[in-house]
Length: 330
Image 1 (cartoon, rainbow, N blue to C red):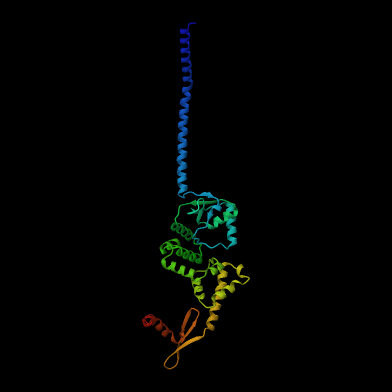
Image 2 (spheres, rainbow, N blue to C red; image 1 turned 60 degrees about the vertical axis):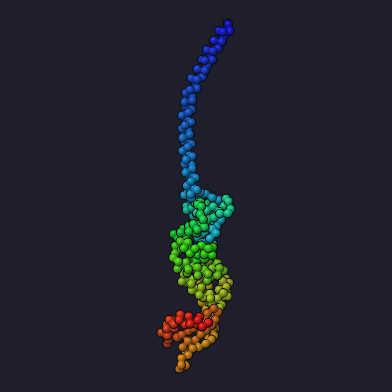
């Protein structure tokens, strides 16, 4: 066979091979192309859903599970350490049996990467931590103002903060430099009520508040009266003595308040009996009009109600003018 003949045969053979290979590959390429497009569309949809999910999580719209050990308390805690062991045990049992039904709210820690601070849900966080479980949480970027407002709104909605907890929270916020208007928003109260809350928190020392606890049934009036009782000379020793009683630590929080309140009342009566009269004002005829007693932080002017109640009201009306005259002369 001549070289020319071999070359022609080889050319046609190569052409047939290429043609057969092309015919074999073409259907495969068409199928692969359609499958790839389908997969690409599926992946694109999944990616869009994933990005939307990430966005919702980033906005705090969906809860995620966090290790409870990574979550720190709020820097502006509005709740006392729960001294009701039975209530905490009930919460732990509920979460153990039914799971954590309500997520807590946290923010990324402003100065420690990888950690968080709780805005609300302190008791749920404590319960899951005790059980060794992760905690379900909404994660939101909150500055300090939004953090304390979120705390206040959540607790106001549940109405489970006691008066003294609200008072201590108000004082803590004021000491941290928050404006009264923001404290009003956080506690859902007016300006006058904020002033009363702060006044009570300032008037009851921390050691006494810690000893009494939440006192959930004790309202503003009783706490305000305690503030006044604490101004008497022997108030602190009497309060501390009441706390030393063996039964004190076993009492419920409201009963601890009552025990200390009774001790302060007794001290007030004792002090009143021991206060010496410093001066007596008499009429021209020599009848006693009023007497002055001085003790501790108070000067007391006593006028007989049975005999001179109208005169006492008259004196009260004249006091502003008398005080101004006194200031001018001194």
